[in-house]
Length: 170
Image 1 (tube, rainbow, N blue to C red):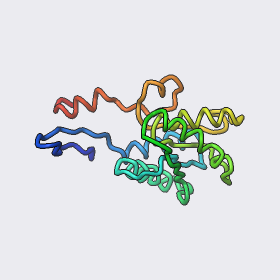
Image 2 (image 1 turned 45 degrees about the vertical axis):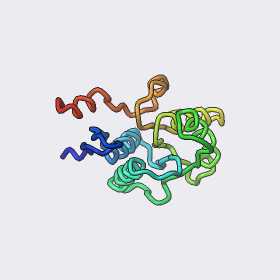
Image 3 (image 1 turned 180 degrees about the vertical axis):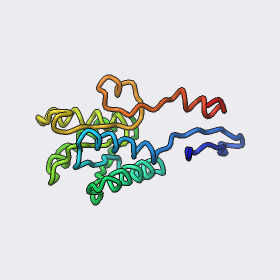
Image 4 (image 1 turned 90 degrees about the vertical axis):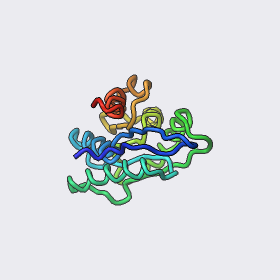
């Protein structure tokens, strides 16, 4: 069943069409990818501000863990962004979360990051701490920024297909 949110919402006085990815499925697929690669101590790293899309990604992530009888309790770690939301801020937030992650027992062997920028920050900080990526810890980011393609941390969201779907062609 296709449960992606599609619809119209009011913006000022005009209607604006909207197409959004299936965030539950994105969280599930990211966790599933790590599980298929042998990860068993998987966490979800995110910014602390809860939005519907973040909540849905977390729901999908936790559903994947539960379906494989993996620990799902206290698997979400949050960091607080110090200023405005953006790729640079998320990168820095990822780096700032590294010490907390390395102090976890058992130590995670897989991380689903709320987005690529956070994942890249995590990867940078973990490598600086001597963690071998992906041999000791694997990271998957959820979105599709260009920088994510350079480090292969992201789940590829097919923006063109989403556009076709929104236009009624897909």
